Amino acid sequence: MSVSRVKIAAGILLLAGLFVACDEPRELQTDNRTVAAGGAKTAEIELRMGAGELRLAGANQDALLEATFRYNRARLKPEVDYQVSGTTGILRIGRHGRSGISFGRTRNEWDLRLNKAIPLDLKVNLGAGQSHLDLRGLELSSLDIDTGVGEMKLDLRGPHPKGFRVKIDGGVGSGTLYLPADVGVRVKVDGGIGSVNAHGLSKDHHVYTNDAYGKSSVTIDIEIDAGIGSLDLRVEPGEAIKL
Image 1 (cartoon, rainbow, N blue to C red):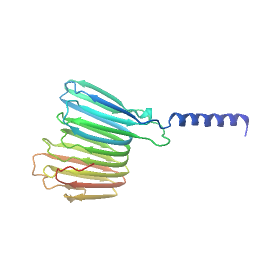
Image 2: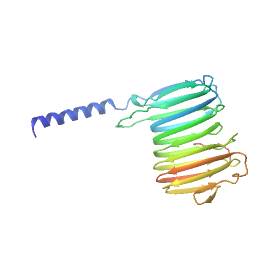
Image 3: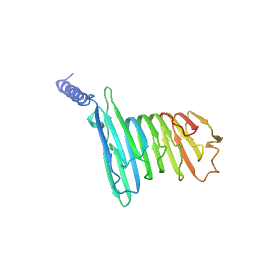
Image 4: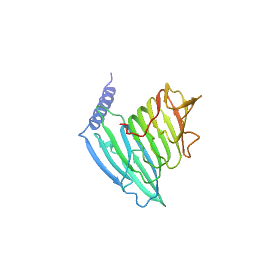
């Protein structure tokens, strides 16, 4: 091997070593954030989480958002951006650039609580990991979820004053949807789902409906385009289920 090649190889190894050292796990950091509604009557919320564990729920609170972020790498600290346009609050949480390669043990946990009284258009973009979305009590106008690799639990039970649309693009993994019994629900499933288990719904080709569909004044229309994995649909009473 020539001297020049030895120098190049040594340089690459040195850079790789520095990169790994800079990316080593650090002590767990905790950030608490509060976002006031600022007079907004409705809100558009977008969450972008590369990898980790997301917990989202509604809460009786004055703020639009109460959040706790835990992470052990500085580059995992999420950006929180909020502005009000007219009567609509626009909230963006996450890192929109490339997150890089992770070495060693990574912890990235978001615990988010949203105001139940403000109508929401909610978008959730997940990379890899687990998501626990307890949306009972939230006033949803629309819901879009894009998942990568991992497990998702989504609870849409509870009273809903108006109907809304749900669109889920799933990757490789599993998903469990808890659906209301007293509100009409229609679920259309497309894509290469490994298996679909439906509890309390009727099936017509790729469409699943509950007993209240076509009878209640409110309808939740759900479209799921999923990759390889499993899907569990459950129509159950509104008692608490621990997600």
